[in-house]
Amino acid sequence: MCSKATSDKIMTKLCEFIEKRVGISNQIIINELSERIKRDKNLEDLIVQKISNTVSADEKISLIGILKKSSIINKKLLDWYFNEIGRQRKMTSPEIGYDITEDRYKSVIVSILDTLN
Image (cartoon, rainbow, N blue to C red; front, side):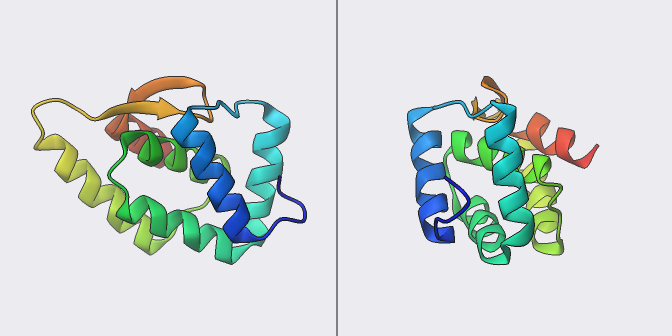
């Protein structure tokens, strides 16, 4: 999936995995994806852009997990994390979604706090 594909194709496939809730908790796949994100600024930007504009809890949680496993953190992402924590705190119940990197359900705010920890 990662070595020769374009950033756009990887992003498209990743969104398909998230939509279909296909877990990629396999360490080999996660390591390969993480390494690709670390060396492909365009892919990193696509993921940060997607996370900033998404309304799906599954997308938010899964993309947060992927960025965490890739050790990606930047100003735009930090701003989004803190704004999202504020938004989530105002909700009557937390957004829950499926994290394809851990093959389990969790809340958006817990995903963000795990990343910032």
